[in-house]
Image 1 (tube, rainbow, N blue to C red):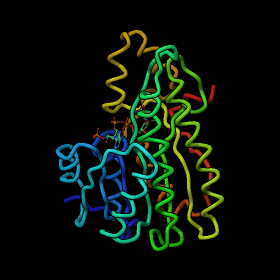
Image 2 (tube, helix red, strand yellow):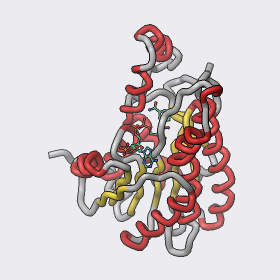
Image 3 (cartoon, rainbow, N blue to C red):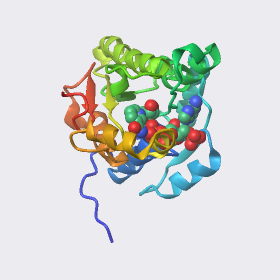
Image 4 (cartoon, rainbow, N blue to C red):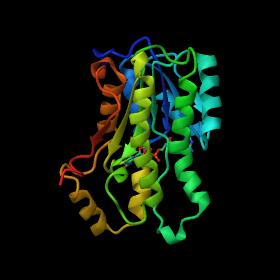
Length: 254
Ligand SMILES: NC(=O)c1ccc[n+]([C@@H]2O[C@H](COP(=O)([O-])OP(=O)(O)OC[C@H]3O[C@@H](n4cnc5c(N)ncnc54)[C@H](OP(=O)(O)O)[C@@H]3O)[C@@H](O)[C@H]2O)c1
């Protein structure tokens, strides 16, 4: 039997988007181990059910939704609050990769990259600003990326989405601070997830080795980011707001 001594999130309900895969899934698992009741969200019901089955504790729920714009995301979060009660925290991990030279970039791809990540983030925040959606002292964490501050060919739309997340959290932190609600982002380096595997398929073994070497500590694992998310969502970070925490194995420091 495994005994989990850290139950700092017990008693709270936490929404995790992107919970069916990779970083979001690892975060849902860690939050559940810390005692949280998790609303696990993703687009694929079967994958989500699998993720839900792996969560410790009881009372978790699945929420299937394809997020693409602020209004839709706001209505969706409102309905979740009506069904499950106020949220003590939200981890917004939903997002897709995009590597495309700018000459091939069309509005549809821009909408897809921005939709699940940035536009949904703004809608989630709007819903949570509503009366009774979050208790005072709640915490919001949005997934950003090192691509938000370091350029890479083919990443213009993705970089723009993540840089916008970094800017968004600074202003949201100002807006929510009177209620001591904290808003932060995590800028991750390359983490071994299904997204990472899809990107790796487009490169050679040598190019991936060179990319990994740019990370002083090598590629990360989903739990490396989940640990940061749990910290930012929990009481230990009560004086941290409006910042982007870099969790990148040393990618950006050179
Ligand atoms: N992996 C990395 O190296 C890395 C580095 C920096 C930042 N990030 C960011 O971290 C986050 C998670 O990435 P990951 O690597 O864990 O990716 P992943 O394994 O591909 O998982 C992405 C998750 O987001 C969900 N999702 C995608 N688009 C959605 C949409 N429009 N509406 C609702 N759900 C949606 C997926 O749902 P389905 O299961 O239905 O597809 C899945 O649960 C993303 O925001 C990504 O940009 C990742």
